[in-house]
Length: 501
Image 1 (cartoon, one colour):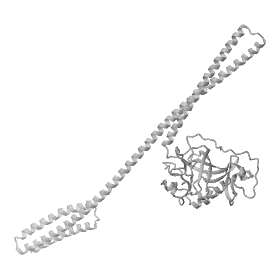
Image 2 (image 1 turned 45 degrees about the horizontal axis):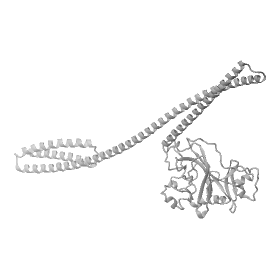
Image 3 (image 1 turned 120 degrees about the horizontal axis):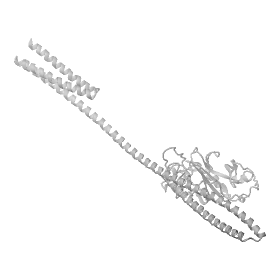
């Protein structure tokens, strides 16, 4: 009876131990328990397993005294339990190992992200320091400009005071001269007395002193003007330095810092407005159309000699009319066109357009023409440049030769050089020789990279941040800075109307 009870208790304890191991293995296999819970299960298991084994060992030891056959059976039962326990511990170890590897991988990912964050933060700190240095330099330059402005203001006040003194002295001198003239008139009538002669001498000496004083004041005024000019030049130099610092910003990419000249043209228009020309059919160009009586800007039909009739935009200014061959105002038209498009022309004559190489060539074959380029920056400052030019025909790829006549901006186009017109699909050898980037592949008379390209990609400046100077519509002299442009216009005008007679 006691042996049966022992075996029943032993079997019950073994079954309870096995269930505990299997439950732990099931939890590990499902991998749904967090790391902290797994550790708790391990500790509970390690605490319960020795207690169960020790209890069984004591009961088995007491059973050894009873008989040999039950001892053998109990020993086999213990070996089975140990195997189950060892297998459970092994699986538990593998599960714990996988959990450690997984946790290690997650920590490595976290460390990698922290490294990337630290690197980005460091780069951002460097950029912030550069911006702070530029702001400090700009602040110092602004302070110097303010000081110079104060000095100029003080000098102007001093000059105004001295000029007022000169005016007062002049009034006093005129009054004395008038008095002297009266006395001289009286002397001419009557013989002067000794007292009057002395008075005349003193007045003469006073006039001489006043004259010397006026000369000294005039010299001081001249010196003040020279000093003002010097101060003005210094301010201009500071503004140039400031523009150099902000080379990639809108303020630098404009005509700021130069004196704005009133728009005028050095081209001499002959006094032929009184003469009215009459043509059979359409006029040969806009200038002839103007002298035939049509004197308002707009779209008209012309027919150059030896060519078919076509429409052009005529712009009236300076007492004559110009034929517009290119107009860009807002970037609404893509100028990255094919060779055929540039030969025939594209766009809307009342908005943005390119008249066409073939049409321009047919106009210029009638005589000598002037090429006028008008530019406007993003601060609405306007400049112009005029060239005498020669345009070749299709057999020369419309080769252009320029000779500058006048202008209000430094020259940016090569002179006395044959410039062949090229596009992305025609005569690419001209461009590829210079390894020019895509921005320079618009249809134009290319000569080298980073040159002026008035048919390039239209880019509006951002309100904040920097602007890549190699992108956009700009005017770039050989020596000088970039002028970022808002609008361009290219026009032609004959030099002599007699060529149409």
